[in-house]
Amino acid sequence: MSVIVTESPISEKDMVEQAERALADISRVREGVGKVIFGQESVVERTLVALLAGGHALLVGVPGLAKTKLVETLGVVLGLDSRRIQFTPDLMPSDILGSEVMEQDENGRRSFRFIPGPVFAQLLMADEINRASPRTQSALLQSMQEYHVTVAGQRYDLPAPFHVLATQNPLEQEGTYPLPEAQLDRFLMQIDILYPDLDAERRILLETTGTSEARAANVVGPERLKEIQTLIRRMPVPESVVEAILKLVRSARPGQGEAETDRDVAWGPGPRASQALTLCARARALYDGRLAPSVDDVKALAEPVLQHRMALTFAARAEGMGVRDVVARLAKAL
Image (spheres, helix red, strand yellow):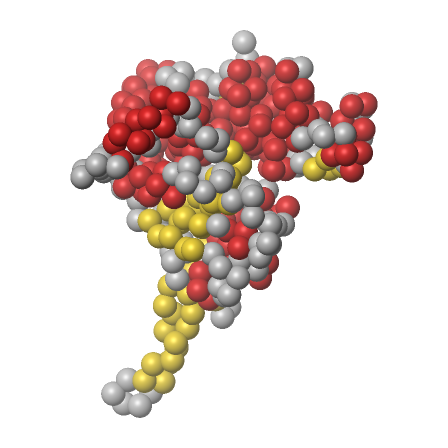
């Protein structure tokens, strides 16, 4: 079986040793998060996969499903410098990026000094991101893609690692601004958060309504997270997985010879989706204790990686079809 390696190769022994250490750390992180977040194993897995892959994630769910709690817990467990921005319609770009202020010294000389905004964090929680105006939403675009911001013509680098975990309520439409496709594409995954099952909700009732409540504890640090992210980028990818990713992404685009896609899909995912699938498949493999991704990883990640990078035709929507239905059909064909 041929494999594709995108970084300088390392010996198999070194890879196994590094992977074993990473697995131990990831296991401790999962255990730390599990003490605070009950149930929602799939959500925790996908969110951690996005962070291990070095990307951003959009958490979509109705109020009360612990979206904010999950982000706060991850910040503590991973030892990241975390900030939170509550997006509102009157929020301005400078409230996110920071601004320059004029100062005067004892000699009367005046100069500008840049005061960094909350975006200068290792883990930024963008709460209810669709409540801010497009002008403010666009302030995050450069930081999410380029990992630096420009204020008054001056470049300011963001700390590393840098991740954005944004939350969005799918029910509220009044007073909200839908995220533009360009910004949605910057999110590695869209993670849908559903209601917890019966056992998880029973545990939530018993453990969060008493006098004491479980609190997260730090497990690893940002430098260790960066090391694991580098290891993931050096993991070999079987050629069969590369071909499955290309087949899946290209079959989701109209005009590629897929009759059902041509009928149902208005526009499909770009190359960034293929990059996201490759990184996330590697991260999921390591998360599960494997040294290389498989086609099953691609199938499992198809929905969160592709659903926000596609749009259906009016006819498909009129028939009650959803993007998830199309993605599920395409993933099943792999």
